[in-house]
Image 1 (cartoon, one colour):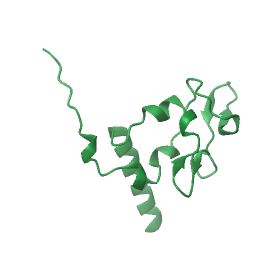
Image 2 (cartoon, helix red, strand yellow):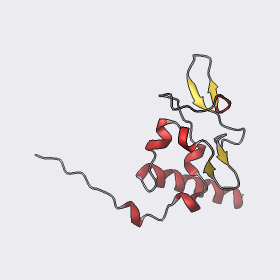
Image 3 (tube, helix red, strand yellow):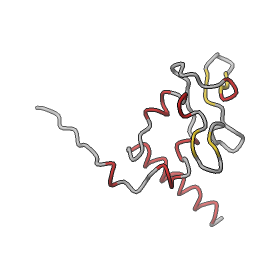
Image 4 (cartoon, helix red, strand yellow):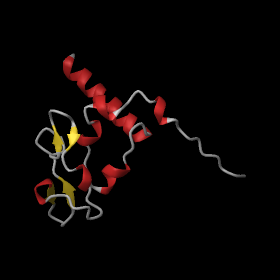
Length: 107
């Protein structure tokens, strides 16, 4: 039996990068391929694995906190290139951040 894949119309999504406040930029990003990420944004763990540097509050070090835009966009890691606006993963992260913010505001 052929498997059908449901396509999602991302143009109808309520999540857009311009008003999301970079929910995806709080995730851990493994450096799988060399895209030219500047060294100051890379952390190497004790096993030699590389990740995108995250600040003490969990934010990616490459995010401009004023605009919520990536300062290394042209050289961003592969996973950042694959994380599409409006995808399931995008909406899931957006909802998780909204929930966290709501809990902090009502604590």
